[in-house]
Image (cartoon, rainbow, N blue to C red):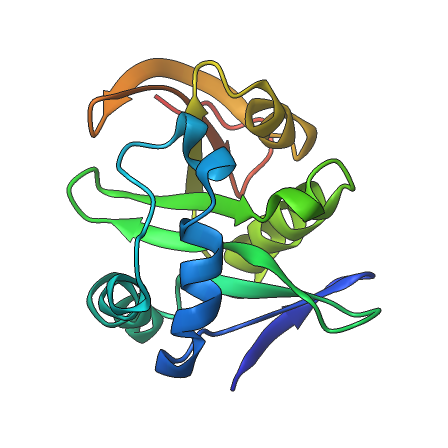
Length: 174
């Protein structure tokens, strides 16, 4: 298990195939999918497939969705990370937390440090983030970490607001 970085209250690490139960726990929660495209997971085999086909391959680029754990009790809270969106030509900042972790600042903390990691360690020039147009909590996280609204879009049949941030503050992004 490789720890990517830690924050004052959290530590983020790479997922492994053995984490299929955690991925299932997160993706079988109906409340999480209120603003996401697609159905909730119905079994651990789907979680394992997601890990092998979509999540773990991102690590070869030093990117990926990383498991978030609370330092206080080692509890799994969800994931946060950077994903190469090849079809869009961007690196996307994303996060997904269990409802028990909502409203405690964990998403903002994880996202802020993930953004910092992307710019300082990976030397990325631009990072985007997006959330469903009605997901005010997620949109607020993007705004709190200094991302700027770029445009409205539709991604996977989902209406989203796209935000962006440059490694060089004040630089205009088109």
